[in-house]
Amino acid sequence: MNLPIIPENIPVGVVGLGLMGCSITTCLLMAGHPVVAVAPLPVDMETAEPRIREHLAKSFQEGLLTKEPATYLEPLVITEEYSLLKNCRVIMECTVENIAIKKAVYERVEAVVADDAIITSNTSAIPISLLQRETRLPARFLGLHWAEPSHTTRFLEIICGDLSDVPTAEWLYELSHQWGKEPTLVRKDIRGFITNRLMYAMYREAFNLVEKGYATIEDVDRACRNNAGYWMTLVGVFRWMDLTGVPAYHTVMKDLFPTLSNQTEVPQLIDAIVNAGGKGVLNAQGFYEYTPEEAELWKQTYEEFSYDIRRLALKYPADVVQKKLAARKATEE
Ligand SMILES: NC(=O)c1ccc[n+]([C@@H]2O[C@H](COP(=O)([O-])OP(=O)(O)OC[C@H]3O[C@@H](n4cnc5c(N)ncnc54)[C@H](O)[C@@H]3O)[C@@H](O)[C@H]2O)c1
Image 1 (cartoon, rainbow, N blue to C red):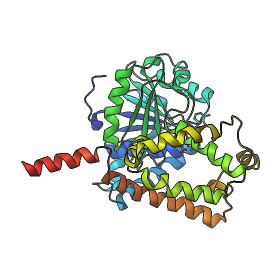
Image 2 (cartoon, rainbow, N blue to C red; image 1 turned 180 degrees about the horizontal axis):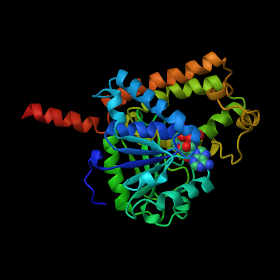
Image 3 (cartoon, rainbow, N blue to C red; image 1 turned 120 degrees about the horizontal axis):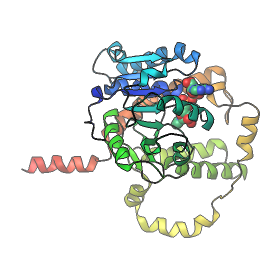
Image 4 (tube, rainbow, N blue to C red; image 1 turned 90 degrees about the vertical axis):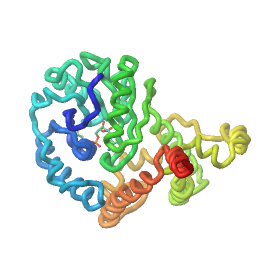
């Protein structure tokens, strides 16, 4: 992919306009891309534009936009017609986590886009090597794993399947810096990619502690927020061990690893909630009890927090120390 990295010259298509499709569209518009957003369900035609408008209005209030929010909507087309994707260079598939549905979407996309257009999926957990085999030209297929809300989060995983073209993934990696991301390139496919593997290891141990009666849900959450939650915006696990002394981790691992949960079944605690219809704050039924008002306030509070944490993350980017060194050198000269 030799296309110069100028978002205004790179039309992007988004297919699937649910929660993530709308925030991804917002992120791409904020970066300057012309966007063709395809609504596979009629209801998306009604809900997508107000959602994107709301994201832009809030981003404006929070100081993330340099122009009036309405200006960002100018290069956006929301449509039910896949044929309008014809000139798009990159496609973001954001439909439900279902292989048959995604496959049907790829067929419709590949029927209209150029053979050198890139096709990506925002799948949370379907292996990219498996999904790309559902396409006609698997080399141009990659995973692009966003985090909600995509227009504020710095996270992005770019995942190669077995048959993906790695230079194409490297080009997307460069481009994604224009979207305000600090991306990760996963060069070899693995189920769950990087963060889900790390996070699910932690979820499993959290269930183990609660189900075996060592601590309550509240206590596990409090410990997690005030330990990992305290440092993780600045550093990842390896830098953390460097910061706090590597030998101590070496010692603890020997004794602690054999005691960690390696359970392979889904925990009973989550089974019971899901079987009873619980979805979390979405329907005020989850690990905690919520009144509808509390559930709504949790949603709002998370949104407020997303903007606050973004400001903090921008103050401490991955190259924060290199920047300090460069500034120090400049004053010395
Ligand atoms: N929600 C998250 O935090 C999150 C995070 C990372 C990745 N993902 C992944 O992103 C994808 C979309 O998730 P979401 O949270 O936006 O879901 P969502 O339920 O909000 O939206 C799903 C969208 O899929 C489309 N869709 C539904 N039925 C369809 C059909 N029969 N044919 C074609 N399209 C159809 C519609 O546009 C619908 O709005 C999933 O693969 C999910 O695993 C979600």
